[in-house]
Length: 282
Ligand code: G3P
Ligand code: CA
Image 1: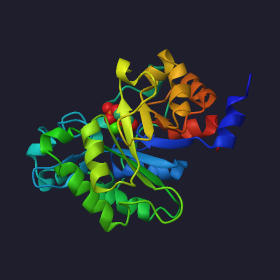
Image 2: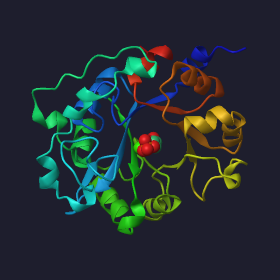
Image 3: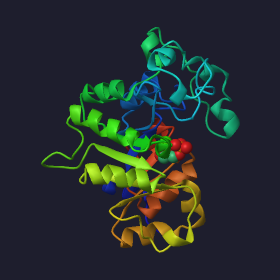
């Protein structure tokens, strides 16, 4: 029996804050990302969508209904419409973590700065990361990219380019990687920026993927934790094939333990603070 925590320490599993520190603060807000950086997360995960007027914003759902006081599809709203909404208050009415079997997390206290809970543009998030004062990675997920026929990827890469993040630095790993459930979206990214790492997300393990192969040019697999739980041999197969493994969304201590034992490369979690402490990192 090997000690999973020792293993994690030695191999430094990357801890990625899913939608920011989204257990403690409203997902995809500046508040959640500031908290994740404060908590010591190695990287931040975010979903991006295009507004009607072509801005990339960090919103998970197709509509803003669940996470704001507004209604409608992001793609039908302009940035100015989104800027008038409150993306923080909904969090106060959420089921407390304790009811989901976790330890109680602190209640979400609304910040006095309205920017902390207003719609977050990817540009603002890139600025936050640039000003973090330490290296912080970014795992950016393209959502419903087929709808826009390449526009999401095009805007994304041109924005990354402005920050000098559209390709890895001369030395060392890329601080940015692009993730998607859509192989087509990753293909577009690779065609335009071949050295930027891409992650192929999977919700189910299709027979086609079982042997550990990934879409052409993809070196990082992003299986959901359910896949890892039900097919524990799959991680080893991916690693044998030379791939990295980034698992989402890993919130339960037993799943963190499992991921550490299997030697995954990154854990994507809503609770970076707790996962870092379980891994002996804080
Ligand atoms: O990190 C990948 C994970 O976020 C994918 O699922 O629905 O949370 O975007 P979802
Ligand atoms: Ca996501």
